[in-house]
Length: 322
Image 1 (tube, rainbow, N blue to C red):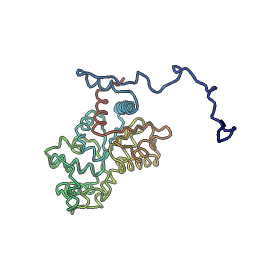
Image 2: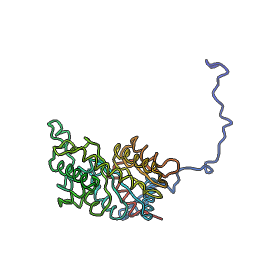
Image 3: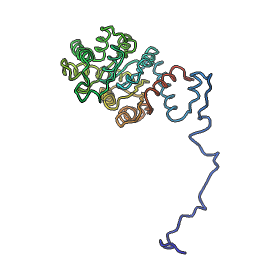
Image 4: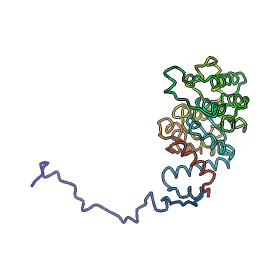
């Protein structure tokens, strides 16, 4: 029976297809990469070694190796963080990594200042927006607004950045929970803490003491300070973007272009984005563009921060560094 398509349109013949022995083919995955089971007696080091050496685990191990290298070279390891990092309880882990030399600077968006300060002062944060927005009570915490706005004004007056001014103001209150505060830990350890706010983006900006000029001056000082830290990344530095989808990726990219605009080299750098979804700006402005044309290597690690950051810390502290 002939086809309705005509005799000149026939299925392609397969008898001359070329094949090869399976064993001769290079493959991306082998048994050497497979995960291994653990037992009740396994150590943390055993657990880390048991993970499949594939995809995100490979990226995590390579990133940890670059952070180890940066520490040995005395190059910056800058953590750009969003407020979600504080709200998922990661401050103690980051503070420990700071003491170990794996956090040499912190860049934060405005929500970090709010949540970290509230943790330091009262040991809790993150209000129920749905329950308070309707009556206009959202963001109305008096102590938080006064602390942030007065720190901005004092920072502008003293010509220091907003992050440093916040650390100084918070430490000055001798808060009960200072040991769980990144602002306090950074200020005590003289680790640069830069704060990058969008005017109107944080609850303190509609409080009675808000001063747009002071906020702008202090946060612009921090932009320039972060740019200097990024300049020092040349030759082995690392930048992590953890939980900021818009503000910090944009700020980091502007720091990169400023450094290069002024004629400074910015090569052999490592960048990474940690988030539970990979958004456009972090992927483009942190992972890809700054490391393009052989300038470095970027990594994307997808997952919840409360899982991925402790894993990174464990790999840094207990992983194999051969």
